Length: 548
Image (spheres, rainbow, N blue to C red):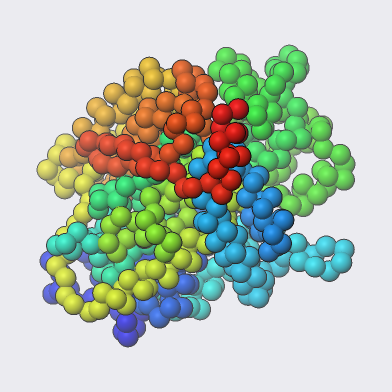
């Protein structure tokens, strides 16, 4: 690990044909919070590190476009216990208290680093930092600066299309396209961190336009599996004319029909299904009229991006009604993602690590949403550990030569299969995952019907080729969304109960016998299997609650 970061590779060492070749110890895919923390950790550990981002590192992704709360809790035993207990039942008792302790400790340290690096946390009346949230633009600008200061080579606008593997199946780099300069790129690396975010199925949620599950597909093609994919049907409340999804603020809203009648039971927490049922037949309106004037001012200060769409159209959301909708945020606010096999955030494939929303957040959330504070804490923590783990893996691997091959499949047929229309495939997937009657109100009949159609789409896409070289990214995005939908629904069918955010109309009760985790994987044939859930620190209490 002594060469200059991102030094050009020897083209003769590879039979792969790309316009730009680099070599690194660690390649990080994704430039959001998890990716930047991973890159900093890897470079700090002495690894030559390259970060490739689908957009511009520091501005792309869900966090950079908005603000987020933080799961930041002082190391007081009582406060920590309360923080862990808050989502225990909501998550169906699937979270791992050991992981929660680690994430709380690591997040506390990482937020302290942010303050030391100059992040402008607001201060309370006593002059103390209020470290409970960060503003995305300031946060990610700082992270990009720290990545560059750590000596990391950044490849902006360079989405990865596929992983590279050696003869033994270990991950050894990635290849992609250069969106601005044209042509392709390849980075040979001793370890790769997948930090490409989750999959929101291009539902127009703010910042989610780049979150199409690309990393999940690439990892699965290399042999990785996933976990918690049945907990991936998160719908967030948004104004019908905007993309900002800040469901938290709607706890101060009243919900009404077009004629002004209050909708009984409609709420941001515990009443979103009521909103979904009404939306199926008529518009739903909201007004934040339960917020006192002092709180209204604080909300505007804490979440300025939330109010921009309203200001643009001249609506005061505190006094005027506005139409709302529910936007699917899939695995971004769900907890499904790549399965981790150890505390260094390694996947089941040698040389491949995962962080942020690309990795399952079951360890800290169980089956309940990881959106907001927990996702932010998870990105900081898992990014740090994945970067360190990848650097250690690279160091242990040494400098031996390896023959590489490309691991990508669906949509990369290079003329061997029929051309595929990325737009048509995307719309076909959305038609199966957006409807509330399939994905929100789940039944065996609805899930099976959708899976039959999705499997048929996969059989066509698996050997397909893009219609042109310029279309390769869109085709891979569509294929990734298709694969994600199949893993999601196959897991949902296997869990014949209601637990966490997974709700089955035909299995409405929680089944204590199904307190387990589901592993899902495979491409042409999707397989699901159960594995034991973590031991609960209070098994008597958990058993009592599960049986209630």
